[in-house]
Image (tube, rainbow, N blue to C red; front, side, top):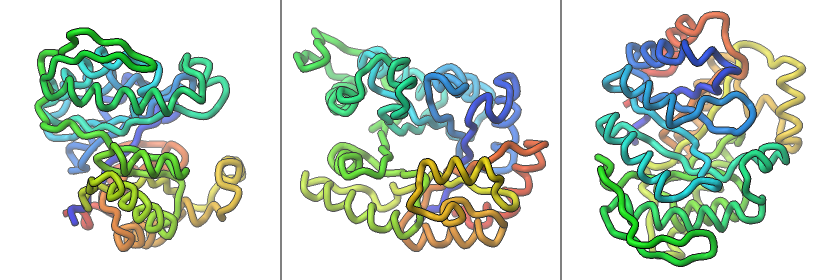
Length: 296
């Protein structure tokens, strides 16, 4: 397997947006594979289309990725924006399609009812893929009406892939049915192994296969014991799992966790510290010295 390590920036919770380009420069200098931006409505995440366009112009090799919230956006506009971002980055764009956070305030800010987000995403993805292929699209559906719709320019990557996350049965089924890859978060390697089988089974049901290289994980780590606040936040999200099983808190624990995920069939890692460090350059240099020897 081709092992790759990316790094996730949570937005203003990590650093001012004016310092994002410097973070990307460090990641490229140290030979990390990619930089990632999660998207939320209200928690200070950087707008992925704006910030990644800046990252693309500031780097030459670093791949640029985001967990992009699809529901609430017009499929033609989003397809056009992402195609142009892929062109401006010379084919370095990586995408994870997400529904959005379940928090009631996030749902309200997104402007789409919770029950509609999954069906809306399912309608958007085939339309956007047709647009990325250069097709002229006519469509009459539950959420969208398109007449003679097309985009130009088209993306560099053919295809421009869409990965999916999630841990519920419906999310795993969606990843198998329409996804090009699968990447969960806040999970253990044993859970990941089980979910990989379920995604592959869902893909088989729809006469599809997921590339074995296209399984990754969002992996949070800690420098030392978790704070009370961090433990409480993890327990709130995953009350069924010991937080230490989800967030390794030493160099050895991080490497053992990475190796366990590799054994489970996962090869792409999006790393982030549970709390921002005092100095980002020093943190990235330390992390590179710890994990990049495994990158292949």
